[in-house]
View 1 (cartoon, rainbow, N blue to C red):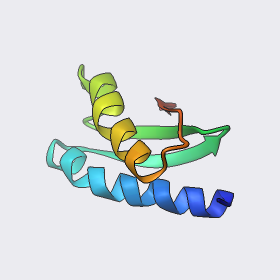
View 2: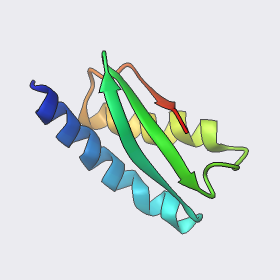
View 3: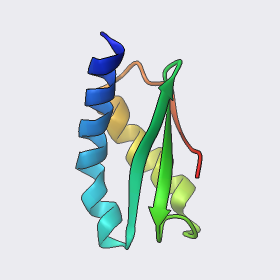
View 4: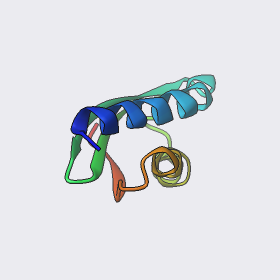
Length: 78
């Protein structure tokens, strides 16, 4: 899989989870994909939310891994 294909799969996953974040006043954007680690930026209400790490692992990371199983982890670089 090319880097471009991987990025498309990650973007599809983010589009799938985004409505849930937007409902709570937040958002997410892709910063980079480096060595099977996805770097994202949590935005809006997600920045100060005390459950954002749980959301990141259980929601965002799980959804991305569903679309791109080679991804090892997702980290917030806000």
